[in-house]
Image (tube, rainbow, N blue to C red; front, side):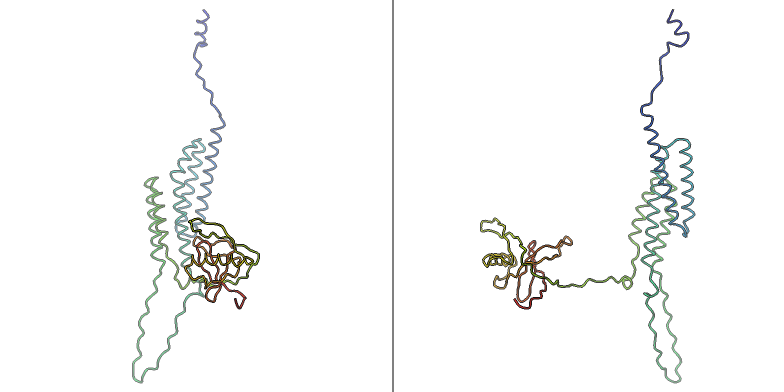
Length: 310
């Protein structure tokens, strides 16, 4: 009887309700996608501002407005994942491609600009006196200067036209066009060498002073093939100085009698791996001139001293 009343009033039906776990997690992910979408809209608007005063400014503005409409439409209908997918497949490739194009264009303008004061002036031609009765000679027509930037600008225009057609065909073509723009960027012309006159650094021999308190460590080889650590200083004994000179002479393949040890100094010796920090290095005198010895690769670097005689 009790079962009959339960079935009559629907109390015997199976419970089909489900509980959503962590309801705030979906909202947090949606807010993250919306913030990312707003950031891409801001990037599109900044890109449009960079394209102002160019023939493509209206196109960039139209892309920004249509993307904003898509953003509002999908957010209103809470289709946030579709919004993120739309940006990943379209907006990011578009921003990367047109950012590369405007960077190449601005760099081309910067490299092609020649200030008025740096433009070469034509040399004045001195008119020679012509003999009496001879007709004046007609000057040959001067060739018109060719704009070196025109071929590259035409390449940029062709790239822009291809971008317009390629981005309409499909969502995966924009990435290929980006790679094409990067290849064109590497073909940007360079300003003439007479305009970009970089200052050439001149070689200079450093002036040093002997540090009488510093010590420099080196590792001479023993007869058995091993090495031992030794030190050399201005105050070292004559025996230690002879051992050091014998070690340096064997490394440099020169006569020990041509060398004399002066002392140590603080000096930054250039290295093949880049600028090296300053450190104490020994100074030797060889054939009338002082040299700094690099104990890393045993090279000699000329130096100057205020001392007149050795």
